[in-house]
Structure formats: C-alpha cells, structure tokens
Length: 273
Image 1 (tube, rainbow, N blue to C red):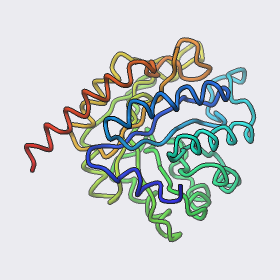
Image 2 (tube, rainbow, N blue to C red):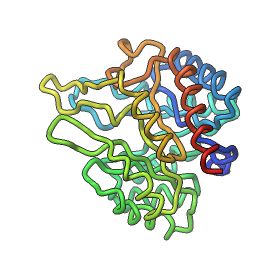
Image 3 (cartoon, one colour):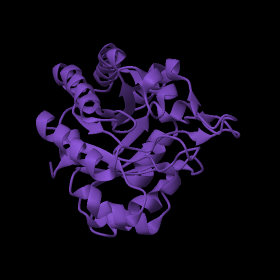
C-alpha cells in the first residue's frame, strides 16, 4: 500500500496504529490483526497493523528481541496483504531501512533515535511513510527539525508521534500541549502513543513496568485535543507477552474503547462544525 498516509487520513475522525509490541509468531500476529480489523471497520477507523520485527532497545541482554528479522518481516507483509491495510515497523540503523521497506508500508523511527540524521535520511529515501516518535528528552516544537530531514529528501509522507516525556528517572508524562504545538511546528499528522507513554522505565529489575489501567485516560485526552491518530500496542494476554506486556492493552478491550473514543470525537466535531 504505497499511499499509506493518504489511506490513514481517508476518513474523518482519527486513525489507529495498533498491534503487538513484537512479532512473536504468525498465528499470534494474524489473531491480533484480524481482531483489530473486525472492530475498526464498523467504526470507520482506518488502521495500520503495527509489529516490531526486532526489539533493539532492551533493558537486559536476555530479554526477548525477536524470532528473526526476515521471518518476522514476512509475517508483517502477509498480515498486511490479507487485511488490506498498511503495516508499520521500527527500524534502528540506516542499513535496515531498505530491508524493511521491501515488506512494510510505514517505517517508524524509535523515540531514542529521532535525532539520528543518517537513519532519518535512509528511511526517507525509501519513499515509504515515515513515523517519527518524539524523543522523551525533546520539546514538541523541536520535532520540526526531524521532519525537515525527511522532507529535504523529497519525502512528504511523514507523521510524528508523542510517546511521553521523561519525568524523573522512572516515569513519563504526556503534555497534551504538544499536540497543537507539533501540528503548528511540523505541519504533519500528530499521533499519540497511548501505551508506551504509560511505561515505567529503568526499574531495578531491568523489566519495564507500566500503568495499562490509564490507557483509556490517555486515549480520551488525545482524541479530545485533536490528535490525528492513536498508537496502541495490544495482545490477547499481556501477562504472557514477550515484550512490553506491562503497558499493553488487552485485545478484547480494544473494541469497547474505540467505540467510546469515536463518540468523543463525534461530540467534539459537532461543536466545531
């Protein structure tokens, strides 16, 4: 799907990037993807299936990182083909951009890497949509420079995502002023990551914690302030997920949550029309 950004913006309301943190296997990926489509389609929510083919940013050496790059990328591509939706995955080094672009529609730049010029340029030159996550250390308006690097390569298919800002050593906060600030500074769609923004990083045990009970709070606020898209990681049983289970949304809760979020956006739009 070459026009991923156009598809995601094809309907009023908000779009969704959702899926598991990391591809654990084919059966799990299809189960999650099919369920997301089944709840998004009746609500008119365009969505992209998200899954990392490899997790490079791990606290401990023994943390699960993936099933193999090409195997996971092939699964992502297969899910996208069956569901007829764009697929998004993270890349970590410039050399990965062209490899991943052969399988997916959206290349995502992890927050810690949003200032890496070579990585941004490599992603941009593939011609794929580039979703840049705002660094936890960066002011919202400063994301304009990351976006400029992509556009300077002739690629205008770019979005930015807020995934929280560091608040001390082990906590993140979402400053919702960042949504209109990034709209103005970047001139791109702005997405709010409703799950990673609830992480509790840098725990003593080396396993990231989280507050999944607050996912709906973050999502409601994001919709209310005009976010163009929402990012959520989801899993049938987060307690058994091999990565980031502590801050993922349980899959069966996604549909009811999206129904409430659509109602909020429609209510707001009715006042603005």
